[in-house]
Length: 270
Image (cartoon, rainbow, N blue to C red; front, side, top):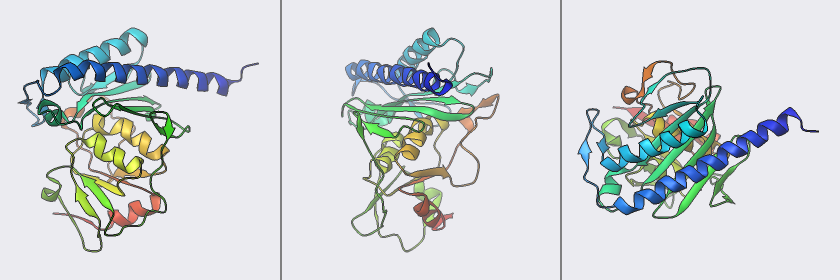
C-alpha cells in the first residue's frame, strides 16, 4: 500500500527527471549558436542574445505543456512573479551570456521548482562541459549522478579559492584575515556551483537576481554548504506581483554553516 510520503517522493522524482531532461535539451540546442550569437544590453544593464530569448521560450513552453497549472518566473519572458497558489518554476535560459556569446565554455542553463515558496528541485547544466548537476530537497546533490559535497571541515588557507562576480569590489571590501585567492568566471551559477562541489570555500555575489540563485541555492544546501543574503532580505519565499528584474539579492555562499557567519562578519559594505 502506497503511503502519502511515497506519493510525494514519486512526484518529486517525476519533476526532477523532467527538469533534468529539459535543461539538457535546452543546453544541447544552444551549442549550435555557441560563440556565434550577438550580445546586446538590456535596460537593466544585463547582457542578452537572441539565443537567451529563444531558449527561454522553449523551456517555458515545455513547462506550460507539461504542468499547465504551475507558475513560471523566467529572466527573459516572464520576469514578474504572479502567484496562483501552485508551484513555481524559475528559469535562467543562459547564465553567463557574455561567455556564451564570446565562445568561452563557462555558461549554463538553470531550472528550479519551488513548492510552498522554497526550492524543492534544482538543476544546472553546463553544455560545453557536459556537466549536469541536480538536487532534490532532502535527497543530496549530484553531478552527472555522482554525489557531491562542499569541502568540510572548511579551512581557509593560502591554497584555498573563493569566487565572486566582476564588480564585487564596487560594493564590498573583505577585511583582513582571508588568505584565499579570488577567482571570477563570468557565470553566477558556475561560481556558486564551485562551492557545492568543494572547489571554492565561499562565493560573494553583490547583485544576483533570483533566477541566478534558485537552483544553485538548493544544490549548495543539499551538498552541505550554506547560502543566504548578505543584507538580510530573504531569497524565499517569492514576493507576489514583484517584477524581479529590479530585485537584487546580495548573496554569500560558503562550504559550511559555521563558515558563513565568519565570512559574513568580514564583509564590509563600501
